[in-house]
Amino acid sequence: MKKNHYISAAICLVIALCAFPLRAQGMAQNGNVADTLFVYCTWEGIFDEAPDTILVNPVISADSPTHFDFEPTGANRKNESKMLHNAVAVALGDSVWFVNAELMKKQFKGDCKHFSDFVPLYFNSKIAFAAFMRPAGRGFGGSLLDILFGIEEVDMEGEQMFYLIDFESRQVRCIDHKELSSLLERYDYRDLQRRFESMHDYREQYIIQDFFIQMVNRLNEDPTVPFLLQ
Image (cartoon, rainbow, N blue to C red; front, side):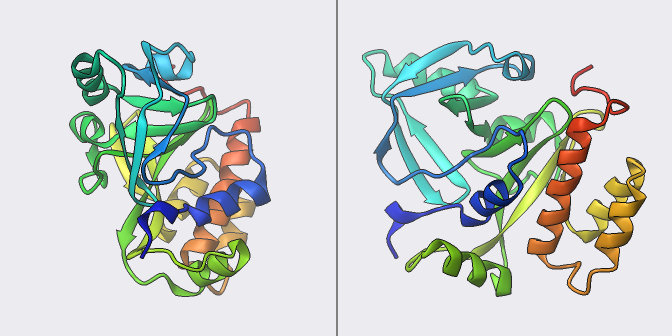
């Protein structure tokens, strides 16, 4: 399989169909050189859009659609590598974000223990979550995404999952059907909960992610939901 053609197809489809106001990871190629990488050392800096430093022309490596690494190319590589190691998250431009998996495992408990290097990060003012490949069969949803995006050759051995970053409990939780139902009940989105739980394939990831993004959209417009880090 060609590693330099990894594409996070499911994430791209969700964004294209839902168009919700969320910072989101799009795609990268193995060995691809980006212009600018913004480095953030605190969560507060992320939400304030105040980077601690900027790296020019880092090399991006992608070992899977949700597993990325960055290598500085400047003259001060040693210090820049150390800063990347201690960063909370990095951003390519103003919309392509990745969270530092190793630092997350130190700050949060729960389902992030299998994360490694940098993984895609999504957030708005009300919610934050990451994406990671869970070892599993791709199933119908994955095959459909391949067809829609014309992906002919993708080395993908797992199933993409969304993971909620809960700052209140300091936990990272996988968004499966049980977690999504619990979240919809917590936010009192009973109409969305009833529609989700009445779906025949409500346990399938493509259904879970669709309803999860609907919840994200609603949270973003809900004045009763507090901002993150308040």
